Length: 219
Image (cartoon, rainbow, N blue to C red; front, side, top):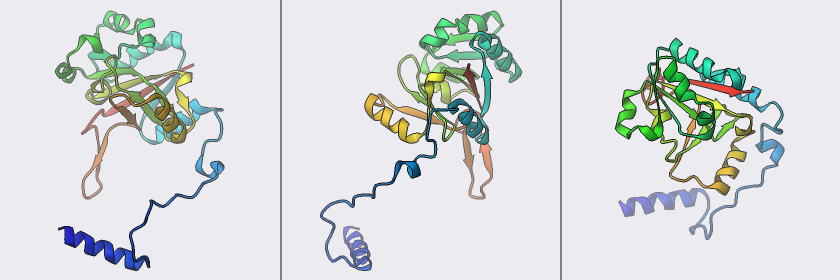
């Protein structure tokens, strides 16, 4: 196998008119920022995110924070959810969403109250997000004890709550933030519901994750 690999690489070098391996990796060219970035300002990021996310079959709704609890309960009833797990983070805690959903007839629990294998018994997960990338309509969630990855990946329905501070223009900004802050045990990037396709390109949603992704953007 090693000889075959060497033979292949020798053929590549000859095609490139090189008789020796490169002493160092090639340096990529510098690309002007106005070319690399498709989103050039912070103006209108929630609206841009909503448009891009809708293209990816994510459901998006702008909502006042005072209306979120009732709006969330109404939405979850509409999609037939009964058991809901929520991330144990400040916004969800401050709005008492678990208590409100319980009062509306749901079996609602925080992530800290659930063992990982119990996550498969819940049909909806409600999360905050760390970032929302406007350019690509992508939700970004960093894993930590208050938010294990199962909440946004296992249930049939994933509901994300977005605050104005969460929005970033593009993936360049996201990578800058993650480089500075670290990724911890991992980061989940969500661009619409789970999708998979067979060799004939027949697309099916919900096979390897949520079938429905809903984003409530707070105003």
